[in-house]
Length: 201
Image (cartoon, rainbow, N blue to C red; front, side):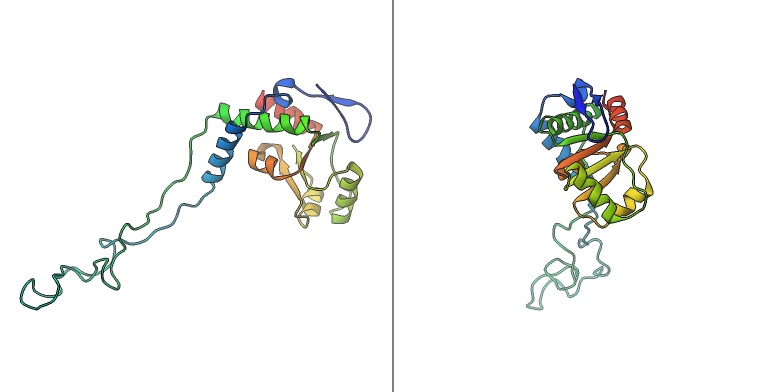
């Protein structure tokens, strides 16, 4: 399939296997959930009665005091005692096969292309790291909420985009399903398209 270049003359030839794949919503959902779960810290921790310091001795004798039987001052019933069913550090990661991950990326890119939300340029750079220059350039392309993807990102583009909440800049090697879905449109350079076809092909 062909997609016209937004800047310049001509069109770029896109691989149908990468940019015209079937949209599989359950697969995309599973991969996105797994990706977000992998980013969770899972570092929540509390102390149970074995981990709380102290409480080694019996506070009073078993019988004859008129009080309830107690074996430790670190019982969960006591102030300063351990926690019942204490939380422990855990790993939230979910297993996703490489084939599934790449299939989800292909499905998302294909849907962006079908909806006209994918645009390709020969190269994307700025003369100076100025936010105003980036805004003017994106306005000329008719883009606002956009993800910019390139193999070699210039410092000028990265610095100019830092102050724009609706603009995200990513290297092709750091592309993932979440950032693709987070923006209204995606702007790819020709070298990024070639790299994606090599990676996802």
